[in-house]
Length: 376
Image 1: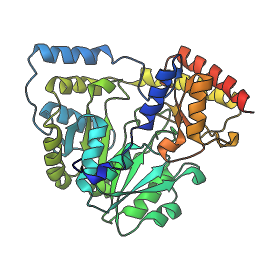
Image 2: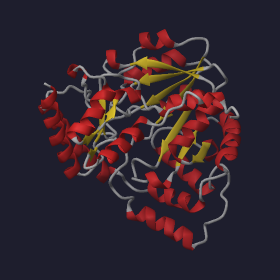
Image 3: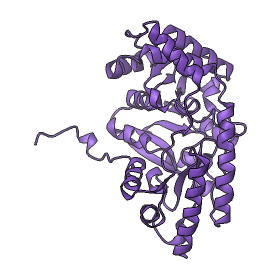
Image 4: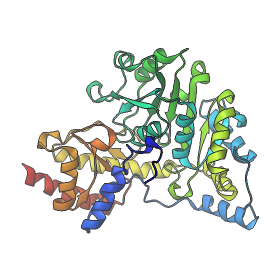
């Protein structure tokens, strides 16, 4: 066989998808694995796409995105506290491509990226492809918040970036002002980027501090955002990246070489999305969160309080099983599927997604409660 890029050798299939597929193979499982809203994209957004198609918006867009959408994103981010110009905006195929472009674009072989854990596994995948090294920052011992002492302990001369995801996937925890202050103090004025993965910040149930708005860090900040979660647009595959213009000069070339551009009619729909209030969806998730958390407490499980997104991260180490074994058995024996904490770099926990219907959540919680009784 002809050798391939050796950076691809360590890559593994997403555990989220693997456990979802296992549940489908077993059959009749309550699926609480994937973070995809069960809600439909709001009608005005779909109508905007249809109107754009009827208007023949079917040709190539500019590599950076249509001027209209970049202007809308710049207004949107400016209104939310980050002064932004259209020149600082790059429209992408979802937040995944935004993260890929950001991390691949800034990393040289051997450079390090600090990833607070538990954290989304895609970060490590991208860093590995880029020839970099992921450095985990364990937050389980500090209340799922970042402390200056812990952060300073993992910064080295090869540190190139830290990734912040708040509200967090998989915990739903929001990084507080003290955490963000610790990050700022550790990196300000140093050759270290802060990559803010803000895909869940419109799905917060209270205040959500955001370091991407800090003007002092402006030249070090890269913001990655998605339309998928707040507007139930997962299948549309559109997001964006905001960065300083000196960074955009290179990242734009990388993105253009990767995807050319995002479809024009989808960009028209995204403009309408920015004008659509996701608050009704947030209230649905809030009620589901309250139900799931109440049921988990009734089972005697501990978890960090989810303050945003649509995940809860209960601790299951007390059952004496590693999280992979626990989730495999819960699928096969309990007929309910969740994702092991190992997928997020943290053993002894599992992630439950509550962006499913009330009926599915009730079935899942009933079956999980029954399964736990078999382990005692």
